[in-house]
Image 1: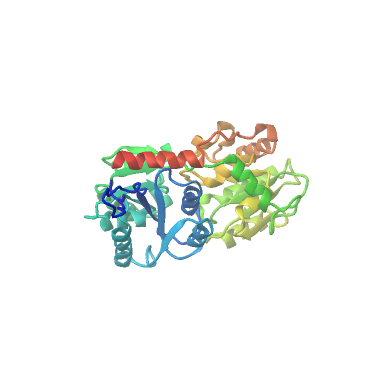
Image 2: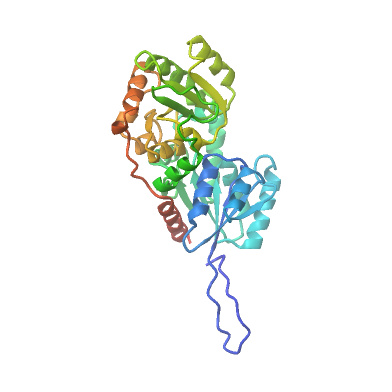
Length: 381
């Protein structure tokens, strides 16, 4: 198997040392913490059974977290900021040095780079799709860009040895848009209930809301954790929250995150007379924010396999989300509602404020996610 090596002791018997584990080199083109970084860190925490995981990424918060966890990480000029040619050179140099059995790409930029850089190396190219949407406008914004990216993905998929999707919805979108020749294997993002709840206990300020959150009353404490941009439909959340306040006047809402729509959203909250009960604290520690919340609301246009929803369910919180993408694979029907129906969203929030109505966490663990990933590698060899 490529990536394995045999060491000899020089004795007459020339007895061989045990084979070293094959290497999976994960190509991750972003330095910051986000959904894909969470996936990488969770996999590094549990390990790939029988394999050695090495992560290539730009210098930044992800690399720092990996080092803190004792994971093998290589940094260098790799990703959009470094440019195409430099990224190919960096990945190819590390493939030659490490001789990985698998180069596993995450996110579109790494996919294109990996398809080129692995040519002639003997390494198998594997991809996980985290961020395709049913509606092309969610990520690409224009028809010509959507057609261009579809053509690019169709070309790079001719080089791939195995394809992973993080949800059945992601798989369906891939099949419809890119028509990969290979079978698409679904491996959802894994979560461990005990780990999530322990993290909330550590980070959540006891008996108080997270820093920057709205004032705490006796009503339900709502939380949104997302980028403040159009596809997250925060205006619909504000409208539903205004409706909820008719029956739950002590309810509060924390809209955490940053994005291009922040100023408009703050203005909309003022227009609705909600400025005293809606806060916009910017980036927050997700664990602390969830530890100070009762219901997480996410009215996105699309989600693939949302860590926010997975963590909220694992933490025992109430959850309300739109019935899009992979959300119905995570949540029961009572938690799903169309964003534009303010009264229905408000009713769903009120229901989820009742601890007896909240969803239960029955999900893939991080270890199971890692085992399934190794299974894909071994099938590809």
